[in-house]
Image (cartoon, rainbow, N blue to C red; front, top):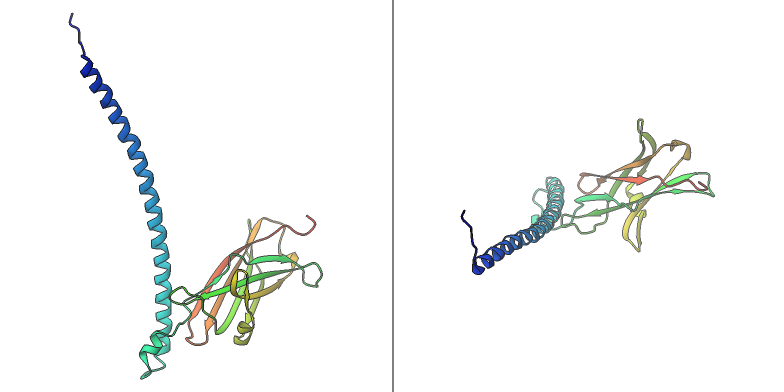
Length: 213
């Protein structure tokens, strides 16, 4: 009957080997977390770069449309003149219950705009906004529409704590908001008076609890 005898150096080698095997495992786990975090940062950066590229393309398209009507004009001036690249309906848009008015509720909407470099820019044109209630079960219900002329858009500009935006109030009737869980889908279309280009934006507005409920 044979016996296997491990010397003390042999035992030490086995112990050290076990430690080495475990250590890389924990090290790999740490490297994996760092790699995941780096990938998330890279994805976020790529999304921001894509958004900026879309704005730049939109602005160039607007300039191209404008340049077709200005043959023989100053090309450099046209290329460096900021134009609206995108509009956005702010997530701070909300539904407000009106207590002391013939109108029972109103949507307070905030519209912003950026140029091709994602910098704030003022609007010159018309704005059409439509709001629809989206019940959890059933078809959408149109709550109202608002159309602003070029002068109306200019008058809607406001500056506040949250920055500058175009504020649009849309009165609606409470009875159109059926007793059901759901939200309000708001879509806006801005038609640029300088370029003729149309820009769209949407936002979902939560329906708050009714007063007294």
